[in-house]
Amino acid sequence: MSLNANSADIAFTFKGGMLPMTVMELSSADPEQIRSQLAGKLSQSPAFFQHTPVVLSVEKLDEPHLALERICAVCRDHKLLPVAVRGGAEPVRQSAWALGLGWFAPVEEGRARLLESVGPAAVSEDAVEEVDAADQEMVAVATRLFRGTVRSGQQVSASEGDLVVIGAVNAGAEVLAAGSIHVYGALRGRALAGIHGNTQAGIYCRELEAELLSVAGNYKRLEDIDSQLLGRATEVHFTQEQLEIKPLG
Amino acid sequence: MAKIIVVTSGKGGVGKTTSAAAISTGLALRGKKTVVIDFDVGLRNLDLIMGCERRVVYDLVNVIQGEAGLNQALIRDKRVENLFILPASQTRDKDALTQEGVERILEQLKQDFDFILCDSPAGIERGAQLAMYFADEAIVVTNPEVSSVRDSDRILGLLGSKTRRAEQSLDPVKEHLLITRYNPSRVTSGDMLTLDDIREILSVDLLGLIPESEAVLRASNQGVPVTHDAASDAGQAYSDTVSRLLGEDMPLRFHEVQRRGLLNRMFGGGRR
Image (tube, rainbow over all chains, first blue to last red; front, side):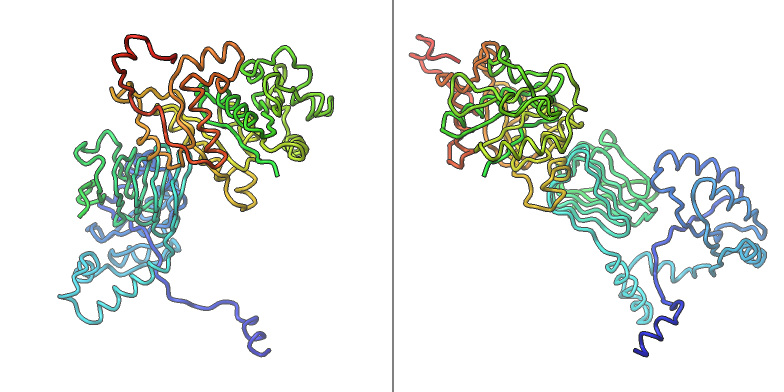
């Protein structure tokens, strides 16, 4: 009884969590330049711009003062919600707080490299544990499993994690995932991985015949795909600013 | 208990009505009490294929709207016992069909019949959705051609989501693939999709394969379902299809190019 009474009194609990978050790495501080590039992206992948929370990273900018308010307004115009700023000098931090945004310290060079290339051999004990914790969090984000043929006109999506299809994705069908997409069968329809901007997401299939492949809004149409790869087991990743499609294994 | 089977395809002109007529005739010839319903309100065709167009008085819409009784609208087939036709209305459109009305008619027919075949209109709109909604089984008619296969794929998706069985999480609608207008020599030359291509894309059990045949056109124009033409390849293929529908194991025929022997060539050997 007392336990119940207690839990009813509790208004909230603090919990640690790792949420997938899109980082918008700014390489220009000019709001108009950002605006025109965003407009281009929006027409390419409207699904991504659904009040998506973003962290504005200004680490690569070497300017002590930023028109942060105008940059945020440009983002909101394109249905991106800036929630925090990462990096920058003291004035940037002050203006972030003034705008009601959070501020993160810049990512240290070493740690950033560690998270990108998971090479456990060279890392300290402490860091390995952190990577593991992150992995477990991702598994908890629920992989969606679909058994059977995804047929023309059907849409199957995993809005938080990975999508696994045991069967074929037929022409005219669409599969979407916040994470990666695995198709244990022929992929003949459209596959869009990393729909919330996760560029680390990939697409894997037994037989590539896809109408469209997209990772974080970067896409290739069937026409753009090397015909040598068609019909083969393939993997698709976003590397060096473009989609890379290569035979699996 | 009667089985409700929808004959559907998505795409038009692939042979739904021909197949519905041929299969219902075949079922009745095996002694099964069968009714075939034309759901293509506004584009009534089944009565022509069945050769009963001069005997239509009342139709499906009249029954749904309470203007006629079911027994007044049912037309008894002249050739086969146990076969009845419920024609569509030519003057109304598909909005005249209601889900409650269709359900009421099907429930009533279930009391008397072994098989109820619903001949679906083309498309995926209201008429097609009502024709499939109450189905226990579905025969998806497909031509060996990419657009037909894609539309069939779409219909298969709807069968898995927009039917009573799907909505009430009952056992799913049993799906059958019926390939029509199959021409083995054009398949060999690459003009048509192969049987294996179609089966691989749709991944549904094959119920039958009907060869492209002059007998079908002749049958349609004469208003005699092709099943009656037992000497023709298409008639035999539909007969095999009916056997499989009744659970018999029949070897597949007419899917390979026939080599004609010398005697066959000299004497013309049988009708196509």
